[in-house]
Image (tube, rainbow, N blue to C red; front, side, top):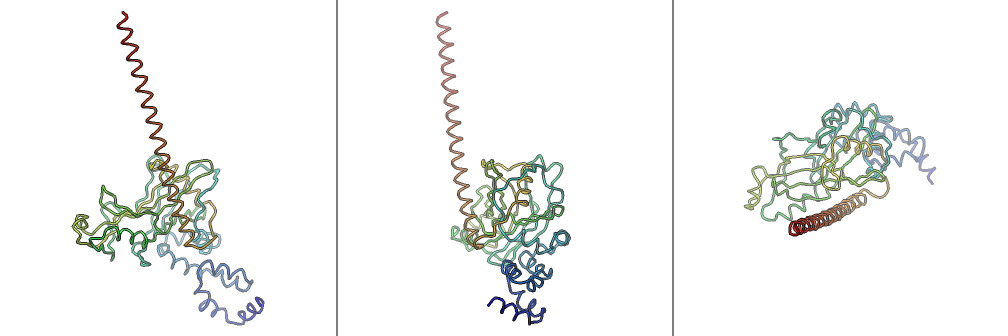
Length: 337
């Protein structure tokens, strides 16, 4: 039966197959179709197909810097898609503990309810001062914000937070043009959304929990901060308002919640670039697993913090007992004299 289907489809003109059939397939289906016959494999490996599929999935990669980087990949856009579409494995074993080569590129696309609201490409610092300072990649300048059509309804803040967490989608692709690899390091769907009580902004977190074998887990966090067009006092007064994206940043945090320095953070990013890709199960199931893993990581952080507090409390107790004992000893010595 399969042979008949292949024979019948081969009677169609290649242009018809490519323009009317293959262009309607998503990436995984297109890859599966290529494995059915040598004839379809030839048609399915056309660069135009994978370029259109990739740019439709990640509009930011139309940037000339990314186009140039992808052109050097072994199979061009097909290699790029195979790297960037699957979820990266969370655990790797990298013998190379040096920071990645210079010239890493970030390609970021942010969606709300399927509508693209922000897209940008930016080169990342991988040399010099960044190696010894807390690692952070800011896609927006300090006073820059992105206007959106999202509106805060006013009055029901909790419902709005839940909607933002469920409706936002973020792709953050890191590209290494030298080693010809790419990785989507975002969880795609948000793992948490909560208000920053210092700034008043809503911080939506897209997190990948990663760890080298034999080391503590770390969190590669892409954070999107949203605020009203004027000031958050409008939200408090329940008058609603237009929502702006104020911050889009990437940072790597350890189990204590501290931002790692550039050298360690870049080694972790390099591990994700070199690591395996998860192609099993459906995308929605992998997303749920990503959130479950994040929640497990939060619990681990809580247990670690509680353990640290118990140790510190025990150390304080020992110090107090030692100090009191020393005081009693000195006082007794003085009385005996």
